[in-house]
Amino acid sequence: MMQRLDLRGRSLSLRELREGLPRAPFDVEAALHTVEPICEDVRVRGAAALRDFAQRYDGVRPQRLRVPAEVLQLALEDLDPDVRAALMVSIERARIGHAEQARTDTSTQVTAGGTVTQRWVPVDRVGLYVPGGRAVYPSSVVMNVVPAVLAGVGSLAVASPPQRENTGALAGYPHPSILAACALLGVEEVYAMGGAQAIAGFAYGFTDGEQVCEPVSLVTGPGNIYVAAAKRLLKGVIGIDAEAGPTEIAILADATADPEFVAADLISQAEHDPLAAAVLVTDSLELAERVASAVARRAAATKHSERVMQALHGPQSAIVLVDDLEQGLAVVNAYAAEHLEVITADAAAVAARVRNAGAIFIGPYAPVSLGDYAAGSNHVLPTGGCACHSSGLSVQSFLRGIHVIDYSRDALAEVATHVITLADAEDLPAHGEAVTARFEAAGGQD
Image: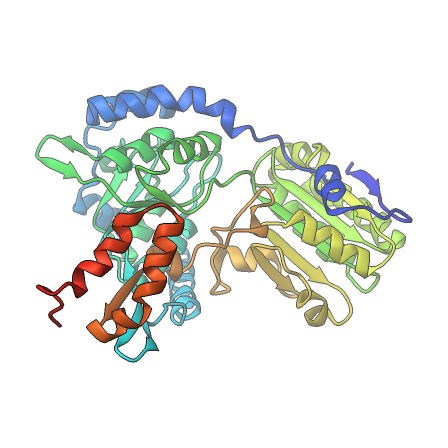
């Protein structure tokens, strides 16, 4: 079922590994041509364009884009009690897991009378996107809202696609479980808009009758290729967390790993999307064979078998054979997976040597699905190899650092000649004159 990639006996450079390891085709650049007119239409026509695109792409035309408070409350009242209890656990653990991520201001005395302070200030307003395509993700409401609130964001809004299956009071609005999660978290501003048009709606703001959606400063949350393309297009108008692509799991395992656990975890990510990537890296040929057999059996029996089979058969999924764990670590560091499980002897020590991953799950009892819902970590993570330079969503994602410089006259005088010298070296004499002006006979007040 899954392709084999045999790297045993081969010494590959980082470039060769990155080029040779399996990846899902995900051409954001090509999607820009599709989303650019969508975003421009939303900029110009606002709510009317958002309704038109909802009709075209979601099959339903919302009468109101903002979800009324009574509809949020109704969704919460109708929520299955077990789902409500599970969401409450997810919320509580997310709050615990994110509570200490906020940064504290630091002030450093560089010289007598001269200090530099780093202040951390929350973004004023954020738009939180929650997908609603093949699956709905109330858990993504939790993962977006909790760190934003803990960061101290003063104004936040959630957007999710309207669902054509909704009837009655919920008609034209997002999935009821998403609405219920918003209500549980105290989110009052929720919009029925999805895809690239939702990102544009957040970026430019719009007026819908008497209701106004003010523009946001930052948009976070995963989505499909058109959401990613809209983020790329509008970056600069808004800040973004990342251009999220198809989900991926890599598992670094040795002969001690249980093949049934490994197979189940590969399938759990393949369940998301036909483009989802599932990669096993192992130095055990026996484990590889047993996992392949277990995957074939389990994939045929699971609910979303067709989707899973497509993902596992795709070019983005593979069993990668390596000589030893040393080579395995080189492979997973080059791959930089969104989710990395380490199921080996002394797994914690092996995991400590991983430098590139969105999230690392250690040992046989920390499956990725735990992190998706109730580990206390965040499941909005970098994909497509971006974990080598980007982080998952956290409280810090919603904070901005501001440098505050406070120098006295004497402190400026101490360094003045160096500032002037460097300004002259860069042929920017007015920079130096901004210093000398402060020490001319007529000036120089403290």
